[in-house]
Amino acid sequence: MIAPRNVLRHEWIGRHVRVARAANPSLAGVEGLCVDETKQTLRIATARGVVTVPKSVAVFRLLLPDGTAVEVDGRALVGAPERRLAHRG
Image (cartoon, rainbow, N blue to C red; front, top):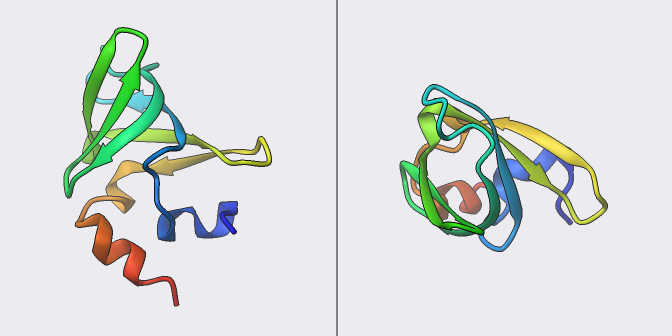
């Protein structure tokens, strides 16, 4: 079960994500459903289309199923998602 202590080890695709802060001010506030993840980016489907956000320059707010919001520094997400998910240990 996804919880604040283990969000890094879970799939983000299909979850509601908001860019809380970003080096590029135009990315701050981007909000929607995470539809794809690469080593360096998250792709977020918004009302205006899909926005690609570099992980390394943003802080993301992830909404958990219980309604809890967790902020995650994107630098902790950089890398192949399948490798991050494999470290569930």
